Length: 618
Image 1 (cartoon, rainbow, N blue to C red):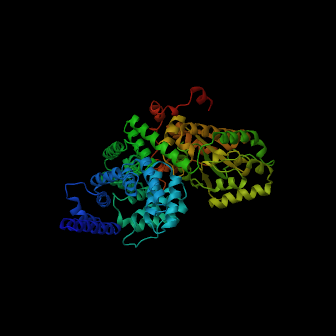
Image 2 (cartoon, rainbow, N blue to C red):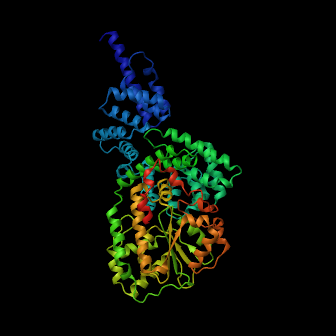
Image 3 (cartoon, rainbow, N blue to C red):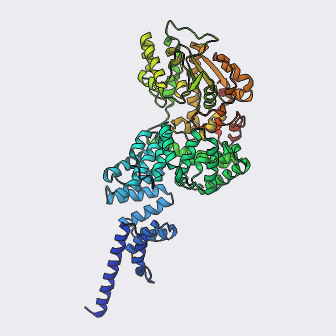
């Protein structure tokens, strides 16, 4: 071997040792050491070897030096497009740039070369979620946890996907075990707090929030979850102050924007608070100009930004965000097999029109004009004003809101009527055939579930969405029900729904045509109940009520057999918990500013407007 050959061999051996050491440092997460080991190999004027660029790119990525990392990784991907390093490099860059399909293709190819590797599957799941296929992402994260049960990132990602699917209890069970109280895992705590709030486990949510108060940081993800809980519990002053702090700190404020706008009057300078929200939304909407929505928090954040810009008068920009946010929601729901089925709802409405009279017990006695009902069921589309009316009635000394209780949906499932997404009128036959004793048992089960005694106790005020879809069963099961049907201008109502991400998003909430069809089915069911039991149903137009509450409120209470109480007019002072999307709005005195909102947006969202002849029929 010549001297030159020996020297070249020694240099090669030294380079190999440096690469091995850099690889070992990368596995330990010591990114600075990686770059230190590779430094001599990156100084030369010639082409840097692909393995060196690959390790350097991953280390730079780990240090947050994204632009430098992408230069190295893109070079690796170009040099080795079908190899393991090239595919991982291409997928990593695509994930950062939110080019979800490209990332998915890269990691899918890599998974074929290296099947079952947890980190590859995790990245594949992230790509699937970015594409809107949350169901596929959740399935992939379950595979990750089978192979690597302790992988924290996969647990957090799966828990977040389960929250999106409404599986709150399962999400809590997936989260990592709590860390020490002095050094909590704030990302896991954030998801746990969200799950407890959504699942209406407010005692647990309060306890968790109290434990985390000393870690308050407006830039931390958990800050928005603490504001949400403040809002739910009616701690409106604190919610407004904290929302403003998050916005001004540039934190993850999308979830707080509407809280800030709705509660701005509680702050020393409401105009400045609103302008801070508008500025934040404009800046974030600019970042959302491309197709990705990952850093913005997904569809909910897009919708919140859209509504903020709508309130700022920037209607075209708002409409674009609404369309994008709802497209993502539809894709997410479809990935879990949740789709709107118009014929099913048509069948449900027609079956009730045909059967309403025959469902009533033969010995039924109509409620007298001055009699109080044993239960009040508030029905209508989401965002039609049902939360407002529940809050008004909850303020009455004789009533108690049970919120969106699951008591009636559980009873409907027992009857065989399905649920709000898959209703089935076949269960009406079981109700028709039931004798008085069986009906009494079902009725007793309802009152036990809501925790109230029908014999002299508080009157439950129940506003679950299911109440209207099968309205005809209410006079068939209850002795003196009151069905309060809240109706609102369709364009205003539809826009208010389309602009919101709900905790449990039924598929019709993110599609204007589907929302129209659902509203028609619900209204037909309520109308059928009114024909069978006219004294049990009152139609209350939202606009007329908020424009003249001095006349409409006493009239409504009188229909319910309740005396007028001033506290009902001051419903916004109630300390009760409100978990609906209107939780901040019901903390304000009645307002009319939302009337006409849909007509103003119709040029940008034509689906808001029904044909005149159809609207006149409603």
